[in-house]
Image (cartoon, rainbow, N blue to C red; front, side, top):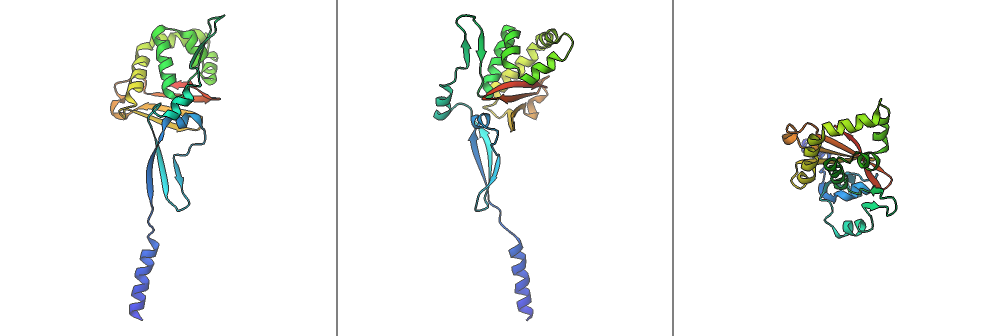
Length: 199
């Protein structure tokens, strides 16, 4: 009887210890730009936990095929008006950097800023002047951040998190002290990304 109790005790201990299987997978970063419902962690029917992390940008044939259907910059032949479209975060960063380089504040305001960002500036006294002054005074610091974010994504210096409509891009902590601005948040408006905030 005593042996039976001991065996039962050990069986109870081992039965209480469940093995948890976790798989780590990668998913192309562009998937996150296309959907609000991407889960970074799912549980499969057999109980396996699958954790996803974004990698790459525009490397796959499927991405290129989709991008070939999108005109990222369109110029109206009659008016000369420029329309910018950004599917991937790197599109916004590159367009933003070009506007800073050229001091093209109208294009930055009209085509790159999100509705919420424009509302923020419009709520201030002399909002457009404030907007232009802010970006003109901080042009070099913002440009430095954008260049690092564009180049650093391939080396792990840049972190990108998708949170619903928002894509948050930050400089890794070991490099952040070199930058006045450290975080850019993008927001998806319909099918395209816009600049939501700069911190």
